[in-house]
Image (cartoon, rainbow, N blue to C red):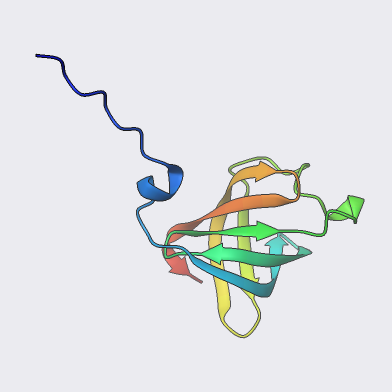
Length: 101
């Protein structure tokens, strides 16, 4: 009897936490250097951000994955985490287990 091929789950299916779409203004704090960004989506475990691709000095490209950052979301608070991935003007943050600073 032939076995069924294993189903490959999409990234959305593999996520542990449900993501909420947003368009919140925020600052990504890299030490003393703030970087304006927009929170594209957020979950308990992390966030997807976008920076102004028209500003060559504001890009995420120069940052290394694993860089410690703080995401300051206007009116909500600060979230400590690490840069998990970068793709052009977008990046993914993984919040630390204490989530909120």
